[in-house]
Amino acid sequence: MTLFTTNYSEVQENTGYTPLPQGEYEMVIKSVKENVTQKGSESMQFDLVVRNDLKAVPALAETNGKYADRHVFHDEWKRNKPDGYKYEQNNFMYYLKAAGVPEGTPINSLQDLFNLLIGKPVRVYVKKETNTYNGETTERNTCAPWNFKESEYKEVNHVYKEKNNTVPQATNTTEEIDYGF
Image 1 (cartoon, rainbow, N blue to C red):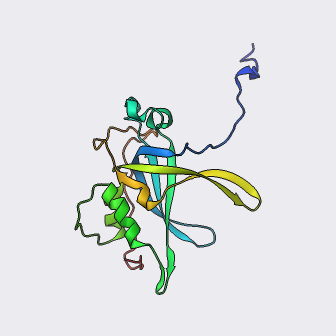
Image 2: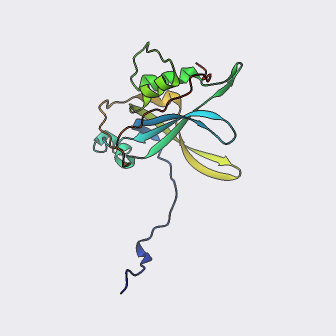
Protein backbone atom coordinates (compact mmCIF):
# COMPACT_ATOMS: atom_id res chain seq x y z
CA MET A 1 0.00 0.00 0.00
CA THR A 2 1.36 3.48 -0.96
CA LEU A 3 1.34 6.14 1.72
CA PHE A 4 1.67 8.96 -0.83
CA THR A 5 3.25 9.78 -4.18
CA THR A 6 5.70 12.61 -4.67
CA ASN A 7 4.32 15.61 -6.54
CA TYR A 8 6.61 18.63 -6.83
CA SER A 9 4.27 20.81 -8.91
CA GLU A 10 3.18 22.76 -5.79
CA VAL A 11 6.67 23.23 -4.34
CA GLN A 12 7.83 26.84 -4.32
CA GLU A 13 11.45 27.87 -4.12
CA ASN A 14 12.42 29.64 -0.92
CA THR A 15 13.05 33.20 -2.03
CA GLY A 16 14.19 34.18 1.46
CA TYR A 17 13.52 37.28 3.45
CA THR A 18 12.30 40.39 1.72
CA PRO A 19 12.06 43.67 3.63
CA LEU A 20 8.87 45.68 3.87
CA PRO A 21 8.34 48.38 1.27
CA GLN A 22 9.33 51.81 2.52
CA GLY A 23 6.43 53.61 4.20
CA GLU A 24 4.54 54.39 7.37
CA TYR A 25 3.10 51.44 9.31
CA GLU A 26 0.88 51.12 12.37
CA MET A 27 2.78 48.76 14.65
CA VAL A 28 2.81 47.35 18.14
CA ILE A 29 5.98 47.08 20.21
CA LYS A 30 6.07 43.36 20.88
CA SER A 31 9.26 43.36 22.91
CA VAL A 32 12.25 45.44 23.94
CA LYS A 33 15.42 43.80 25.21
CA GLU A 34 19.13 44.35 25.42
CA ASN A 35 21.28 42.61 22.85
CA VAL A 36 25.04 42.10 22.43
CA THR A 37 26.70 41.27 19.11
CA GLN A 38 29.46 38.68 18.80
CA LYS A 39 31.97 41.54 18.69
CA GLY A 40 30.58 43.05 21.90
CA SER A 41 28.52 45.99 20.58
CA GLU A 42 25.50 46.59 22.79
CA SER A 43 22.03 47.68 21.75
CA MET A 44 18.46 47.81 22.87
CA GLN A 45 16.44 45.85 20.31
CA PHE A 46 12.81 46.62 19.56
CA ASP A 47 10.65 43.93 17.93
CA LEU A 48 7.95 45.86 16.07
CA VAL A 49 5.02 43.98 14.54
CA VAL A 50 2.76 45.36 11.81
CA ARG A 51 -0.68 45.37 13.41
CA ASN A 52 -3.18 42.86 12.04
CA ASP A 53 -6.20 44.53 13.67
CA LEU A 54 -6.05 47.32 11.07
CA LYS A 55 -5.99 45.23 7.88
CA ALA A 56 -9.48 46.38 6.88
CA VAL A 57 -8.80 50.12 7.31
CA PRO A 58 -8.90 51.56 3.76
CA ALA A 59 -6.23 54.19 4.49
CA LEU A 60 -3.81 51.38 5.48
CA ALA A 61 -4.52 49.02 2.57
CA GLU A 62 -0.99 49.28 1.14
CA THR A 63 0.76 48.91 4.50
CA ASN A 64 -1.06 47.09 7.29
CA GLY A 65 -3.50 45.56 4.82
CA LYS A 66 -0.75 43.80 2.89
CA TYR A 67 1.95 43.29 5.52
CA ALA A 68 0.13 42.52 8.78
CA ASP A 69 2.12 40.36 11.22
CA ARG A 70 5.49 41.17 9.67
CA HIS A 71 8.31 42.04 12.07
CA VAL A 72 10.78 44.90 11.89
CA PHE A 73 13.70 44.92 14.31
CA HIS A 74 15.07 48.26 15.38
CA ASP A 75 18.29 48.68 17.37
CA GLU A 76 19.13 51.61 19.60
CA TRP A 77 22.91 51.30 19.90
CA LYS A 78 25.08 52.38 22.78
CA ARG A 79 27.44 55.11 21.65
CA ASN A 80 30.96 55.94 22.72
CA LYS A 81 30.71 58.91 25.08
CA PRO A 82 33.52 60.60 27.04
CA ASP A 83 32.45 58.63 30.13
CA GLY A 84 31.99 55.26 28.36
CA TYR A 85 29.48 53.53 26.11
CA LYS A 86 25.97 54.82 26.78
CA TYR A 87 22.56 54.98 25.16
CA GLU A 88 21.54 58.28 23.62
CA GLN A 89 18.95 59.27 26.21
CA ASN A 90 17.29 61.84 23.91
CA ASN A 91 16.36 59.05 21.48
CA PHE A 92 14.27 57.40 24.20
CA MET A 93 12.07 60.52 24.24
CA TYR A 94 10.89 59.72 20.69
CA TYR A 95 9.94 56.15 21.68
CA LEU A 96 8.23 57.18 24.92
CA LYS A 97 6.29 60.03 23.31
CA ALA A 98 5.16 57.74 20.48
CA ALA A 99 4.00 55.17 23.05
CA GLY A 100 1.87 57.84 24.75
CA VAL A 101 3.86 58.04 27.97
CA PRO A 102 2.92 61.31 29.74
CA GLU A 103 5.43 64.16 29.99
CA GLY A 104 7.29 64.12 33.31
CA THR A 105 7.07 60.34 33.87
CA PRO A 106 10.10 59.21 35.90
CA ILE A 107 12.10 56.32 34.41
CA ASN A 108 14.10 54.71 37.22
CA SER A 109 15.49 51.67 35.41
CA LEU A 110 15.57 49.89 32.10
CA GLN A 111 12.81 47.68 33.49
CA ASP A 112 10.62 50.80 33.84
CA LEU A 113 11.46 51.78 30.28
CA PHE A 114 10.63 48.31 28.93
CA ASN A 115 7.35 48.17 30.86
CA LEU A 116 6.27 51.54 29.46
CA LEU A 117 6.96 50.51 25.85
CA ILE A 118 6.00 46.84 25.50
CA GLY A 119 2.55 46.29 24.02
CA LYS A 120 2.08 49.91 22.98
CA PRO A 121 0.87 50.99 19.54
CA VAL A 122 3.15 53.26 17.51
CA ARG A 123 3.26 54.60 13.97
CA VAL A 124 6.68 54.09 12.42
CA TYR A 125 8.17 55.21 9.12
CA VAL A 126 10.16 52.21 7.89
CA LYS A 127 12.97 52.72 5.38
CA LYS A 128 14.29 50.12 2.98
CA GLU A 129 18.07 50.25 2.65
CA THR A 130 20.71 48.37 0.74
CA ASN A 131 23.69 47.20 2.79
CA THR A 132 26.96 45.72 1.54
CA TYR A 133 29.06 43.76 4.03
CA ASN A 134 31.98 41.44 3.20
CA GLY A 135 31.11 41.75 -0.48
CA GLU A 136 27.50 40.59 -0.02
CA THR A 137 24.68 43.06 -0.74
CA THR A 138 21.38 42.69 1.08
CA GLU A 139 18.26 44.76 1.62
CA ARG A 140 16.94 45.47 5.07
CA ASN A 141 14.49 47.67 6.93
CA THR A 142 15.63 50.46 9.21
CA CYS A 143 13.88 52.97 11.43
CA ALA A 144 15.14 56.14 13.03
CA PRO A 145 14.06 57.23 16.52
CA TRP A 146 12.49 60.41 15.10
CA ASN A 147 10.36 58.25 12.77
CA PHE A 148 8.38 56.90 15.76
CA LYS A 149 5.08 58.76 16.17
CA GLU A 150 1.91 58.27 18.18
CA SER A 151 -0.48 55.77 16.65
CA GLU A 152 -3.58 57.08 14.95
CA TYR A 153 -5.35 53.96 16.28
CA LYS A 154 -4.90 53.84 20.06
CA GLU A 155 -7.08 50.78 20.76
CA VAL A 156 -5.05 47.64 20.11
CA ASN A 157 -6.79 44.40 19.14
CA HIS A 158 -3.75 42.85 17.49
CA VAL A 159 -3.61 39.05 17.84
CA TYR A 160 -0.12 37.57 17.78
CA LYS A 161 0.30 34.65 15.39
CA GLU A 162 2.41 32.69 17.86
CA LYS A 163 0.70 30.08 20.03
CA ASN A 164 0.98 32.35 23.06
CA ASN A 165 -1.10 35.41 22.13
CA THR A 166 -0.10 37.48 25.14
CA VAL A 167 2.33 40.34 24.96
CA PRO A 168 5.72 39.21 26.29
CA GLN A 169 6.78 40.85 29.53
CA ALA A 170 10.11 42.58 29.94
CA THR A 171 12.72 40.58 31.78
CA ASN A 172 14.51 41.83 34.86
CA THR A 173 17.75 43.66 34.35
CA THR A 174 20.71 44.03 36.67
CA GLU A 175 20.41 47.44 38.30
CA GLU A 176 24.14 47.77 39.12
CA ILE A 177 25.11 48.15 35.44
CA ASP A 178 25.59 51.72 34.22
CA TYR A 179 23.07 52.07 31.40
CA GLY A 180 23.85 55.69 30.64
CA PHE A 181 20.93 57.45 32.28
